Image 1 (cartoon, rainbow, N blue to C red):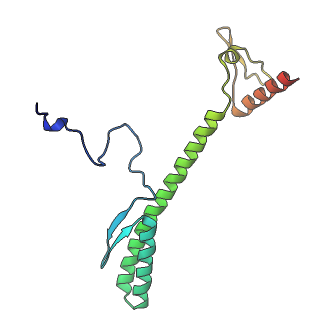
Image 2: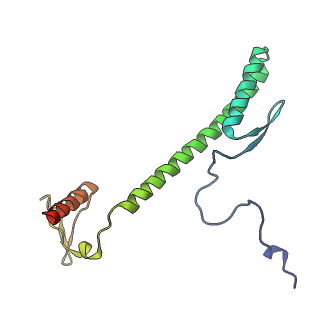
Image 3: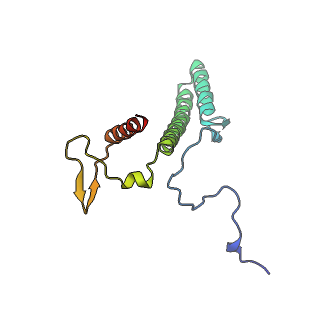
Length: 155
């Protein structure tokens, strides 16, 4: 039996509606084809930047100011693409490191969460609500409480 045309599975590298909120995030290894003023170049953004800068230098040395400026503008474009890719990679690396640090942080067990925590600071941050004690857990206070529990457990 023949399937309708719209039921065919898509091929290639088209857009996928997977709910990923990242718009076109540049990659350092993306290869570009550049149709410059007089030449057609291929390579990643950093390579194209270097090639156009070399062409601009050669044109300037030959006294062709307009051609040199055109090559310089192309080089600037690929420099910006390369910088965007580097910034995106660093942001991904920072997010990955943050996720790793959160995953490695000790998670309190259910019994520890249910235990009432004393107000060790004496600043009135602990409050009673419906018979349960609510504690303000800023990162500094949380680390102090964990350290105190470890000290008391080892003593």
